[in-house]
Image (cartoon, rainbow, N blue to C red; front, side, top):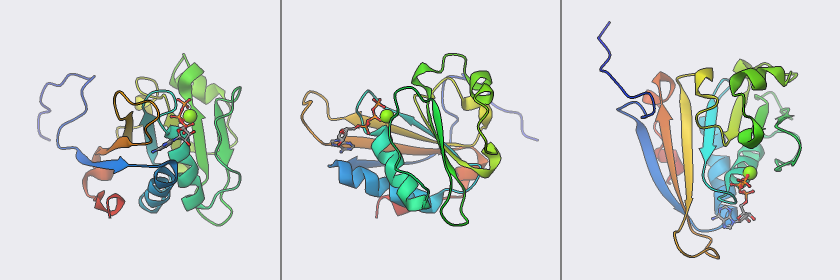
Length: 176
Ligand SMILES: Nc1ncnc2c1ncn2[C@@H]1O[C@H](COP(=O)(O)OP(=O)(O)OP(=O)(O)O)[C@@H](O)[C@H]1O
Ligand SMILES: [Mg+2]
């Protein structure tokens, strides 16, 4: 075992596998979600961050389409997590909006989702600092609006694979 270098827990680990993309419409954001669906598998955690209206739910909707799950992904007002079962034999999508989740993981376990998280693909909006303890392996997706112009549809998206799960998985399929 190699000795781990001292590290600030707030910083992402080094040697991350990362791509940066420009997305110019909501439809393209969905397409990015559909591409992501080809890369993910059961047990994967996707952490989505970005300001209100950045496009986190739009991306997750495309992910759900690509995974072939039941029900359109929406941003429900009073529901923290929703399970979208697969219409085929793939993993279900668990879509979590952690905006109102103050207690972190414990609270999420208390949601009593009728699904096994290790057998699901889990996409969490507003999950930074709340659900990392679920796994070291995660796909961190940060969406930024183009600064200054609120009517602009342009988004910068950074997708970073963290942990062993993503060390050997190229993300270049997302940029093609
Ligand atoms: N390039 C783009 N990518 C994604 N959404 C876009 C883009 N351009 C415009 N939009 C619009 O911006 C809105 C994004 O809303 P969405 O619910 O996906 O954001 P969100 O990040 O989930 O917000 P919240 O923080 O409230 O959950 C949608 O109305 C979408 O049509
Ligand atoms: Mg949302």
